[in-house]
Amino acid sequence: MIPEAYQDLLKTTALVHVATIGPKGEPQSNPVWFEWDGTHLLISQTKTRQKYRNVQRDPQIALSLVDPENPYRYLEVRGTVDRIEEDPNKDFINHLAKKYLGMDKYPYNQPGDERVIIYIKPEHTTHMG
Image (cartoon, rainbow, N blue to C red; front, side, top):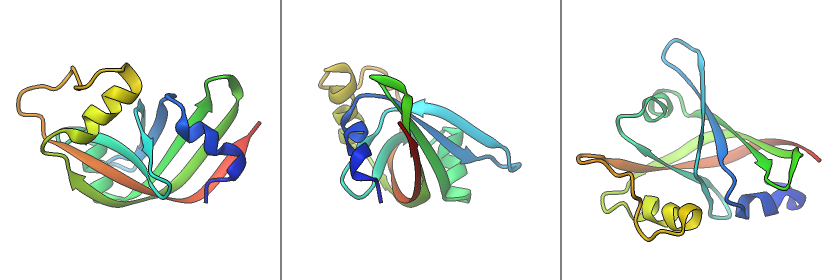
């Protein structure tokens, strides 16, 4: 589903902007860390975040990623949330902290944070550059 010419973007440490649909039908977007497993785009969220509530209600999601080397080259992925898994030991967010910060543990965990891994299945892409 992801064009071969854009696979390299999925290996970068660029942020991916994630758009979901809010409770009143309004779009909500913000940048997050991500991982690509070859089939799904994965993001981490805490259960208190609006984005987590949005995808539980409506699994439609869009992500956009700009090439860190060329701001005119981008990849947009539209898809659905395929599944949500618990991350009780924070293994996935720690993996992302290693990728993005070079740290073994995510330094911004708050007491009581409950994290999940959101698996996004790409269904359509647009791209440029």
